Image (cartoon, rainbow, N blue to C red):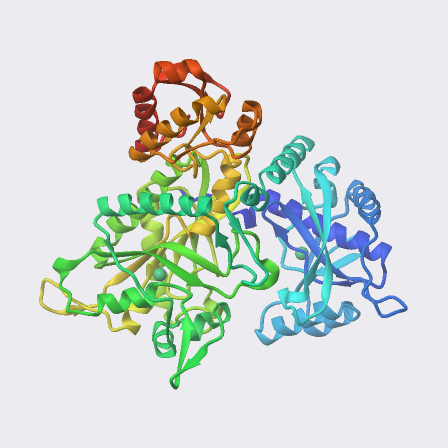
Length: 596
Ligand SMILES: [Zn+2]
Ligand SMILES: [Zn+2]
C-alpha cells in the first residue's frame, strides 16, 4: 500500500500555518522586518526574517526575550480563529500587495519567469506568497502543542554571498502530550549527540587545517568502519556481488559522458588542472563501474552483473549544512551497481529492499519509511535527463514492484537522481530521531550515455538497466546515526574495545596479560589496565569508554584460572573459566548479537 506523504498530512498543514502565524507576530513586533521563507520541516517549521540594520549599519538580531513574547502573541492569534484564505492573483496584483517585501519579490519574479501560477494565503492582517496547504483556521493549532525553539543565522537561499537572515525555529504538534514527548526526545538526543560522543569515545575528529566536512577517523572509529565493511562484504558475497576498486579522481571527459557535469556540477569540487587535462574528485562511483562493465563484451548470461565497492566520494556540500558525521564532504559509500535486463529488474530491486530490511533488523531499527522519489516535469533537461516517457516507465516499474511485494512507501516529486527514480529511506533511531539513510536507484539515463550493451538471447545488442544501491549509505553518516542510536553503547561485535581486563592489584598484572593474549588470539579486541590506579578508578574509566565486558581479576581468580565478568549493563558473573568466557564472547561476535 502507498502511504500519505508528510507534505499532504494534517501535521504538515498545522506546522505550515504555525509558520505563517509566527511571521504575523514578528511583523507586529518588528514592522520593518522583511520576510524570507517559512516552510514546515521534519519536526516543526521555521521562518526567516531580515530585521534590517541599526544606526551603526549592523544587522539587527532578535532579542533573547522575543521568543516568549512572540509565542504569547501566536497563542492569541490561534485563539482568534482566523480563517486561512487562498487566492490566485495576477503578477501586478501580487507585486502591489507585497511591494515592501524585497525577498518575496525575488521569488515572485522567478515564479513569473517559469510561468507558474501565483497564489497568496491570508489570515487576519497577514498575507504571504504561498501555495499551501494550510489548516482551515488558526484555531486548529493546539495552543499548548506549540513552541518556539531557537534563533539561528541562515543565508538567504542558503547562499553565503547573500544576506544573512534570522531564522526562528519552532515546533507544533496535535497535542500537548506529543509536544512533551518530542521535547523529551530532543533532551535525550542532546546527550547522545554523535559529535560529543564521537570525541569522548575517540571515534573521529574534525580539524580546521584539514577542512570542513572532512573527518579524521581515530583508531576506535576505524574499527567501526572495518566492522561495517566486513558485514557488507559478507552480505554481498552471499548475494554474488563482485568487488572492484576505483580511483578518487578522473578526467572531465568521464563526467561529461556520465552526465555529472551537466546535471550535478554544483555538488562537485572545483577541478584541478594537470598535464593539460582537467580532473575532478569523484562525487559518485558509478562512472567507474560503468567503464568496468564496458571493458569487455557482455552477454545476457553475464547478467545480473553486480559490482560493489566501498568507494570514497567527495561532494561539495554548502559549508552551512555540514554537521559532524551526518553531513560531510568526503564519504565512503557502501556502493554497488547492478546491471541487469528489464526482466531481471523486479527480483534485483526487491533483493536490495530485502537487504535494507535485513540491516534494519540487525541494527534494531524498528521504524523506517521508504519514499519513491520522482522527477519533476518542469526540470527535465536541467536537473533530470530529458526523457519523459522513460521517467514515467521507470517510476511505474518501481511503484509496481513495491506494491506487489507489499512494501509501504510514499511518493515525492522532484527528489529523483538525475538519471532515474529512487527509493529513499528515512529511519528513526532508538529515541525517535529521524535520519535519511539509504537509496535504491533505478537508472535508465546513464547506461545509454556510456553505450553499455549486452547481447540478448536473440543475438541482438540491448542496453542494460542499472540499479545503484547503498544500503548502509556512507560510513560517515551511518556511524553518526549508530552512535546516537546506541548512545555509544555498541553491541559487542561493533564495540571498538570488546573486553577490558582489570587486575585488582599489581600482583595480577601478569595473569591479566595472559588473558588478553588468549582473547586476542581468538579474535577478540581486548586490553588490560596495568596502571597501578585503584580498581574503582579503572572500572569507572572502562565504563566511560562504554566497554561491553570488564573482567575483574584478583588473587582468587588468578589461582583458579577464572575471571569475574562485569557487563556494561551492571550484571555480573563470577568464577567464569577462561574457556567459557572466550566462547561467550565469540558467540556474541559471530551472531552479531544485539544483547550483551
Ligand atoms: Zn506558506
Ligand atoms: Zn551510482
